[in-house]
Length: 244
Image (cartoon, rainbow, N blue to C red; front, side, top):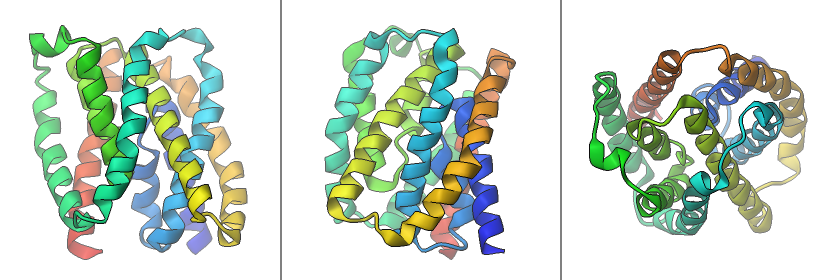
């Protein structure tokens, strides 16, 4: 049963990340948190997220992202990760999860109204860098690097191709940096190898299928999918605060 839950979580999370460009950690941890210790699950989430990014990036040829759009997010985000890791030792993780969860639960329904905030839509690279930095901090704190940038690019009213591509490249860079940090600190060890082998097999095909489905859904469907995932993330964080 443990392996079944592990594989099912990996497949669903791989498909969702292939479709939206983020949310692997959210989906996978909603399954794995019941069967794996956090010290074991966290490096596996990062490893599988990086792998699913590599798989689904092969389907990006249909849309060429302007690198100037995503560079401010990535550079600032990489600076924010160490700060988030440092703050993790100061801020209570459960309190952080509760605050972020309540924010997402309240914010996502409001976004369905499709608010038009002009100063955000007209904002430039400095504002994007600030969001990237905060996303990096959130990534270092709890692996939620995609939550804030996904909300931001939606408020900027960018086309769904640009939204998904910015999120995909940003999350890939942050997760890869985190994975390298785990390797240097020794958080990845022989205990992870059997799980990593299973992940390579169970994530690949769902990630490719999700990436292909992206080009068949509308802007509205994409927005509702992202908001649904973020709302689910908020619910999961609040539930985990209460029971875990």
